[in-house]
Structures are given as C-alpha cells and as structure tokens.
Amino acid sequence: MAPGVLVFLALLSGKAYTLDLHILGGLGNLAFEPGLEASLGAAGTRFNPHLFPLGLISLEGKFSELADFAFTYERDPLLQNRLLASVGVHFGAAKLDFGPFIGLFNGGGQFLNPGVAAALGFEFPGILFGSLEAASSIGSLAALPGEYLQQTGEVSLGFWVPYVVCTLSVNTRAFTQRKSDTLLIKDERTRYQFRADVFTKNVPYTVYIDLGYQAVRRSYIPSVGASAGDELKSLYAGFETSFRVHPAFRLLLGAEMPVYAWGDYPLKGPDRSVFLYEFRMGLIWTLPGKK
Image: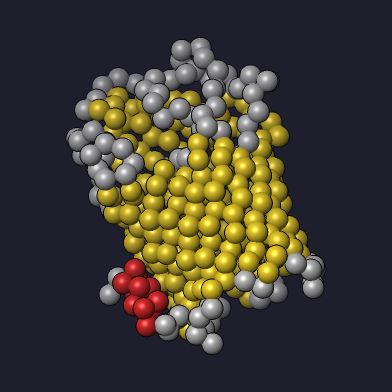
C-alpha cells in the first residue's frame, strides 16, 4: 500500500500519535531568471538576482514508536513545486524513510511528474547521528518541451556537545527541463554546510546558526554545438530561531545571506549595490492525537 494511503487511513482512523503541522513562507533573490535561455557570462553580463517565493506545508506524525510519516508540499526556487509523502520505520538505532513525490505545475504540458524518495539514517542519542538521502523523478527526458526531472541528494553527519547539536552536510539539488526541441536547461545547487542548534534547558526558544559554501549553476545544453553555463559561488551565513509562545504553538523566524559572492568566469558577480538574501517565517502547530 502506498505511503500516502497509509497516512490518510491513519488520520481517518484516529490512530496517529501527536501531529505537527508546519507552515512556512518567505522570499529570496539568489536565483537565476527562469526565462533565460542563453549564458549571461558569454554575453558579458553580470549576475542579476531573481526574486522568488518560498513555501512549505508539512504534516508530521507517528503511527507508533516504531513508525512515523510525513506529508509535505514544498516550493523551492530551484526545484519549484513538489508534493511528498513518506513513511519511516525504525530498526533500533537505524531508520528507513521511503515514499513517492509528485512535481506539480512546473511548466510546459507536464502538470504532474512522479518520483520516488528514500533516506537511511542512524542515531546514537547524545553521541552521533547521520543520514543518506536521495530523490529523483521517474523516467527520462524525451523530446517534448516542458518535460523535466527533479533530483536531490544529501549526506549528513552530526554530533552532540553540551547545549549544541552540530551537523555537517553536503546537499545537491537539480532541475533539468527541456525548453524546446533543441535546448535543455539544467539548474543545480551544491551546498556544504555546518549547522549548530543551540539550546538551553527550561527556556522556550532554540537558535540555529548556519555557515557554509554553495555553488548555484545554470547550464544551457543545445542538441547541436557546445554547452554554456553560468555559476555563482558564495560563502553564506544563516540564522533561525524557534520560539514557543504556547504549549501547542512555536513561531519560526530565519534569514540567510551571502557573506561574499562571486561569479565563476566568464560570469561576473552581482554589483556591489545588490543585496542578496533569503527570509522566512512560519509556525509549528502541535495537534492532539492518540495518547
């Protein structure tokens, strides 16, 4: 039975444990203009930021202490729109997550694009944890304009020190779309990140600090001739706080910005007067479930 069906049946039957509803929105501008079909660097033009909306709606819960689920809608500047469902199964210190996802209304005539996602993680509480995650659309790009593939991957390793949870991760995202019979466009982002979750006992808030390096690339791949591409690299820092305003509600507020950004030749980096950023805010609502 599909994970999405299992989630739906659990909610209808009232057999889910406590549920968390996440609602998040935001804005950012570190992205290439979607309509571009030729290299900025080859034309001698600087990187010009594109404003994009962020969105996340997620319902997470447990069937039991050994199984949980998540149902998520995500709006991302690179992957665009996705709807995901997953079930997680615990095996002692290890955990396996798997489930389908669907790309939604991401241009062209391909309104729904199915895929599959899986993750394998482990945790030794208070000592060490890690995970390996991957997701990809099913099939391959054919000759029809508008067809696309969404792909993600991540490797992470974390550890605990007093009042801080530290995580090192490498994350990749790619969105490849056939724009015409003769042109493919591929957007990619590779990110190397260190995250510190800072907390203190008996206080209603948690602070998250991110530091890292990322490369955002757009490639133009014609059917005939040489490919061209633009790549913007940056060192970035981010800050997010989670504040409990009620036993059932937590507010989230976060921001991220490049400390230094530069273009990979021949692309020129953004003008010094340009401010690159990502801002997000939202809430987590804990819903009562089975006791």
